[in-house]
Length: 230
Image (cartoon, rainbow, N blue to C red):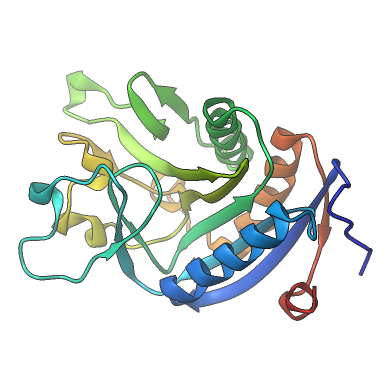
């Protein structure tokens, strides 16, 4: 394990939290890391994981966008609207000191676009929508399909939350909601777009590399146990 002084502007600690991580547990750890980063006790850090199934609602979520069947939803302090996290979806929480949140969101989208390209999937931004998309074809009745979502919070110059990239998740989880508050679009995954199963474990090292490149950082691995000793 290399030292991680808080004033190293080039380092990015990569912390893999594993699979089936409860949302509240990861959110609590985010807040702890955020406090350490604000205090200059940690360098920029990204938490990488797969969540246990959960619906989360950002600050802009409207009442009609919530599940009508009583499905529980966790209200969170990020931007954006309602979405789902769970098995088969790679989630990254970069806790990073920045000055421009719009430019930072674009860098996260750039990272996801590059990851998709690495797996032979063409993804792009769509004007007026956050995240990255596989382009639809109106002539075939095929809508634009969301591959990855971005939702952020910036507090005291340091980010929380981040992005989610669909790898091999079951799309039926999205049937109960209007994902990210955007009607008349679809949700897809790397597996669905390529016709072969692409799991998070396969995508993770490439996503870490592409994220570090997009942020202009030097990544290094940090075990969760070592993080908590800081």
